[in-house]
Structure formats: structure tokens, C-alpha cells
Length: 198
Length: 211
Image (cartoon, rainbow over all chains, first blue to last red; front, side):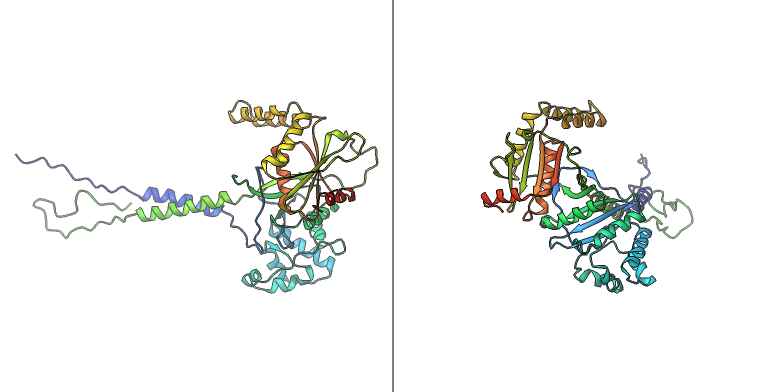
């Protein structure tokens, strides 16, 4: 008796559908991801148990690094453009259209406004290499105060977040808080990281 | 889909015409799927890590207030924390006669300032332990988040509860301030304020060699 021939079935599974799903998700995540913007300083934030999340947009970010330099950043390209124009008018510093465009693409900076045109003329890679001196926030020359004020005029729903390094000396923090209070900002956020298990 | 595979390729037709072996048009997608999922994992992890956490703080209004507008607190209710150098905290209570009490030195460890704050808060606010119970109920799903928040804030704002005045010296670090604000959250202290340090307190720090 001849054996009954069972038709051999292919063991390969059709992967096309899976690929479709994988790439659909991939596209979604790629579009949804907001990459961390280039930051001129690395800041190691202190930890806390607080679980409040920072809103994604409309945030002024004041960064203070461990060498007590103050950096300023705000999100939204149109906001940045408006702010720079009004600051230029106030401090009588002229910017070219190209520099304004460049500024609207920059997330954080930390130089006095007089040095800003020079910084904007650099390429993005060069900018990361130079040491920015920080924005003056003394009581005599408080540019930070004006940056905050102009930003709030340009975008009135903006929230303020302070991001400091663990090793930042308190006097600088005090100066920044005093600046904020002068501008009637009595409610703001400190950026912290997740509490490390002890 | 371009699929023409049946059994084991061509050449099995009995008595048929001689045909060239049909090559499969199927492409193995497995590596592509692998790559796809690898990238998905990467993007998923990077997105979730990206949201920074924050701690909210309300500062008192800087405008000078008249005597009537100032909130009056009982002296025995308030504790003043001085954030000194080298990660040390000095705290003192006000005495009945309005004079500051003896300064005590401690640190940021759980057995340090936290233990003191929890104890003092419990002495003044008998309901403070209920927050932990409400928290437990919230975690077990017995009550919802708004109910928990309502109960917690009600207990925290108890009028005879502990009031903490935080004064940071110029020698302290930013980390110290965040740590102490964090302790406020941990110890469920509802009323606290960050205030500038005064000369009397600087003198006091000198007596304990921490100025």
C-alpha cells in the first residue's frame, strides 16, 4: 500500500502584518518623541518625592548650573522671536533677521544681551563649545528680570520652572527667586528628579 | 501579497511539462520586524524618561504688609529651620516669652530633621496619622483621588498645626533647600514658608560654629 501523502505545509509565518504594525508604532513614537534640546550646561537636579509633572509647553526654564551661571530658555519659536525683538528695542542692541531666526531655534542661552549677536553668529556646534558667562541678575543689572517680563508679555499663560544643580550655591538661587518675586511671580516650580532609593 | 508557495516548489507535477524550478518570491521579514521592535522599544523608553518632575512652591508676597495684615501665629506653633553649611540643619522653637529657644543641630537623614518634624507635627495635629490611612485607602482603590486630596488638605491646614519657617544661609546649597521642601511633603506639613535669614539667626549660628 502506498503511503498517503500528506501535503507538506510551509512552516514560515507571514511576517508582513507584524512588520506593518511594528512600523506603524515606530512612526508614531518617532513623531511623538520630543528630543532633548541641546543644552549648554549639564545640570544634576536634586531628587524629591514630588510627582507633579512639568507641563510640556508654555514653560520658561531658568537653569542655574553649579558654577552659579544663570541660563534662560522658553519654548515656542514665535514667542522667542517676539521676546528677542522687544528685548533688542529695550537694550538698544540690533539683530539681523538671520540672527533672530537663529535665536528662535535656540532652546537655552546664558550670555548678557550685549554678547548675544556674537553667540548667534556661531554655528550650533561651536556654540556648545564656548563657555557662556550666564545672564546677569544682580540688582544693578538685572537682565533676567527683563527677559522674564518680556516673555510674559509675549505669552501670558507661561509658567516658570527653575532647574538648579545640586551644588548650586544658595545666594544665586536667592537672587533668582527675588527676581521672580519682583516680577510678581510667587508661584513657580523647581525641577527635580525621581527620589533615589536610599 | 506576492505569495505563490504551495508545497515544496515546482517539479512535482506528474506527467506535466518539464518546468524550470520556480523560485520563491517570499522574503523573510523576521530581521525587519526585529529591527522595528528594537527601535520602538528605544523610542518608547526615551519618551517616558523625558518628562521632568517638578515641585511646586508658593512664595509669600513681597509687598510690605501692615501689622494687621500679617498672619499672627502662636509662638509655640512655629519652628525655624536654618539651613547651614556642610549639610547641617539648625532648628529652634520660640519660647513663651518671645525669645528664641536653644538651637539644635541635626542633618537631612531620615533620623535627623524628619524625625523631629514628624514628632512635633504629631504633637500639634492629632489627625496627622489619618493621612497615611487615607493614602492606603487610595492605593487600595477604596476612595478616589479628589476625596483623598480633600481629606489630606483639610488635615494639613489644621489651624494649630506646626508651622515651619525655612531660612537658608548663604553657605547652603540648592540641594539643601530642595531636600527641606521635600521633607515638608514627606512629613505632611501644610504650612511652611521660605524667608530671608535675619541677623539674630546669623549670630545664633555663630554660637554653634556653623556660620
